[in-house]
Length: 165
Image 1: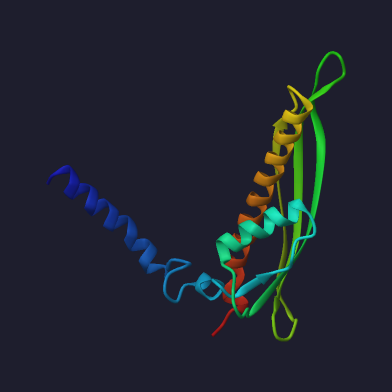
Image 2 (image 1 turned 90 degrees about the horizontal axis):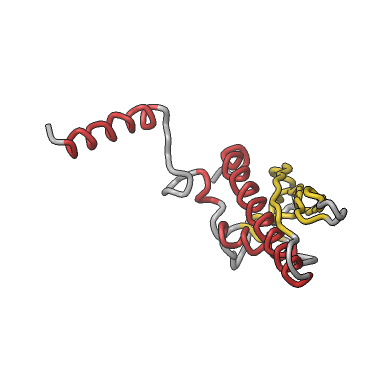
């Protein structure tokens, strides 16, 4: 048996337990998440953090013409100093973010799913004030993308409970 034959055999053997447990791709035909794609409208952002969050959510879920669901959210961001130099200047910051979200039925307004996600990023404040501001902006954008991905993951995980045809 050649190494490629063995590799193929092992891949098929590894896939059998997944098939036996009812595994199906989330975005595949009839998958749990297929009912979310192009069906969720996200509330309009109120600031840059909200804009970055909504942008990533729309990348993942699409922008519907006629939505079946509406996603509302509340973003909280806190910046904490992490590294203090001998002259008492802070040169590294941690950006901590939390988002509370609720998915509503677009027609009735009924809350179908809700949750909270959190994460953090960090940035360096060395250099000029312009460089530090750019670093902070980048860290906040990365944080909103991480939080949006976590929201989508939770919606996919819970969609079988509320997203029935």
